[in-house]
Length: 243
Image (cartoon, rainbow, N blue to C red; front, side):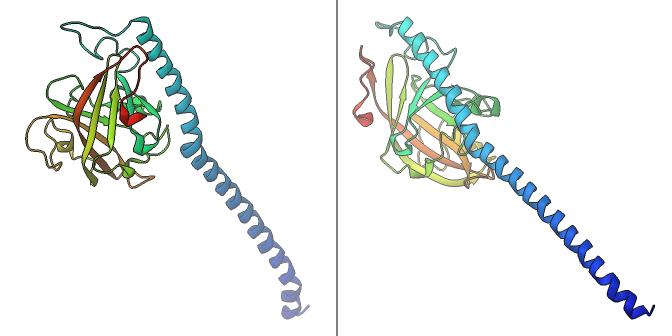
């Protein structure tokens, strides 16, 4: 049999092998794509569902504790400092449309992955809202695990940030934003936050989260300043900014 004839007979077999290989490769790529799609869905959707359930349950527990111990009154009462076992209080930011956000101590993944915001214990210790001076510094996820600060970029100067404790509403107003800074820039959470425009001690609040969306390369910062406090009444009537 001539070489040319043998080559013609072999050609269909080679094409069949190539077609089989390409078919297998295609199936593998489809499988990999499906696995990646499921991972993305888990990371960006299902972790939100789980975290929201967890945060809601913990928030209910905190409110039940508050009901069991009515607000303190009289000289020397420490608003909000009375029972922080399950959480310090609740953050309300209407412009972010994220409902109420339970705030707990710490900013590690173990804390924030439960769908809450956390106040800094390190590298710069956060002040607490009732302290006469300082910076109440908070962090939360922007995507996945509740994504409580996903819409941080919607905040503008003059927008309200309200923190609710068992006894007191703390009403802050946004005065500055920093859309991008290094994740290592701890000066933005200093008692007098650098780059905020403020140079003297005050009663500040700082919100921090990752940016750009779906990454953790930089940090997005929003600063607010306390404008007033309101005592919690028997009906827990929210301040005007939340009505």
